[in-house]
Length: 259
Image (cartoon, rainbow, N blue to C red; front, side):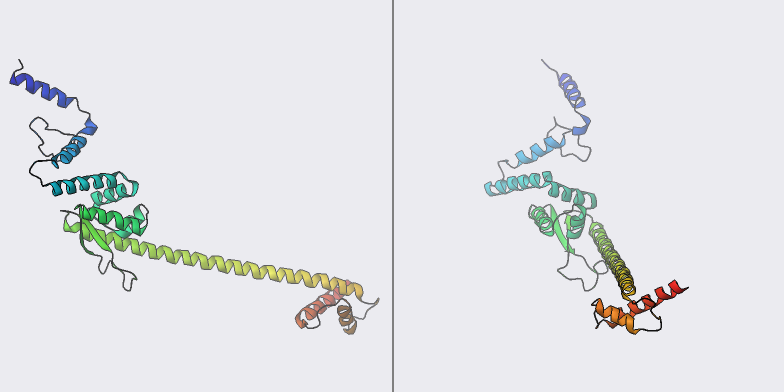
């Protein structure tokens, strides 16, 4: 027959054999006198089974079971788990912080936070106010979600992070716009340079053709043969700028040959 001392030693040995990772290092609800160091999994089982206590009304039991199922689903999902991590880390958060941290869509963030609110995990403790919300910001005010029982300071810090994110996003937008303007100006400058080079090449080629079309021993002071040669080459008579550039190029070439 086991004595009280034997049972105590057996209980101590069984507790010593638990893996460290399964031990709950925080405050522990005293489940039974025989389970003094329950793992998180044991606590979860206890909480689920506690919903079946005889003194709980049937509708309350079903609601409690539904809440546990919903919370397990949220905490085990990628987006929901990350939102839970943010709340556990800071105590409070906003849509914007969730969007930037995961990232996810505003609709998904709203749906998850509202489910946590419905399950009684978080409270809507207010809205982001000035000076953290910039004036004339379009759209509805951002709701602050805080874990139930969180220190009110958590909501203030959530607003501070919100304001920092808004400023960062604004600065990023301004920087992107600046880079886009620079890229556009560079593209326009390159295009203008290319047009100048194309024009210069066109004038050079046409000037060579005009020179070849001039009569031998052409008097460089006579411009009529140059214009006649341009007409013979079907150079647009209405493009006076082009014809003048060709004329100047022909005269420079003649001067270079004579020199």
